[in-house]
Image (cartoon, rainbow, N blue to C red):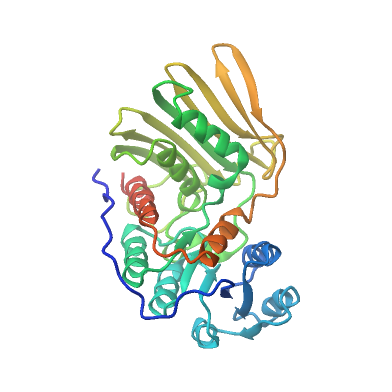
Length: 347
């Protein structure tokens, strides 16, 4: 498969004023995830929560209890009219790209739930809008920010495993999404691959410093039946193999509603010429993780302390925004993640 290579962005001067030291943020979509991210940002004191937008007035009212000074509205247009420096988007996937572009075109930085777009084309359009406006863009790929993943990343990138040639990653969820739009391919972009597998693809490519993906093979299933290539159904189980230009091979597996005997199985293992290492959840938990370093049959625990990690990606973005950060070319890596997801669906 061909991948989208990062491009060197041109320098653009925004026509909008420089971001103040305490940015005014608007929150678009305040269901469970949106409200959790808003609460995480509020705790930092780095920003002012200026506006909350949700077509469900009860959700907006609940969120407003955490930000009594915020203006409650029902649409993105009304939110932007309030005057904000950044927008945090937590709406259904089909809306992400257009809403992000509208906010960026208005001069507001954006932090968006994953996926940024339902495919690589949508993802590139958002990235180009951020680059054109010289505005900070972030996506909630939150697993990168776990302390345990940081330990694993440092071990891999500093050569602690030697030459890494294989990786196995999985995310099996005993539950499925509780919103109907997740099961509509037009609205979601896909099933468990774009919902859960996006984290696995991102972590694998990030660990290897985003080499090109040269070949993809996969199988997708729905309720135990193999799906044809052209289908309107969404997958609830998927296995894929990615061959990388650096010679390494990555194996991925993800699922919804798997009878796994626990709430979830989440793991990422990397194997090299000098040893291996694995990140995994503890006793089926969505929140507690460990990292172990393997040398032959011996293992060493590197990190295990539980942490409140769910809001780390958005608070990192808010901190950078408060420091005046603008467009970061590293966000273009997300286009390669999206292109790889496209290749899985097309393989």
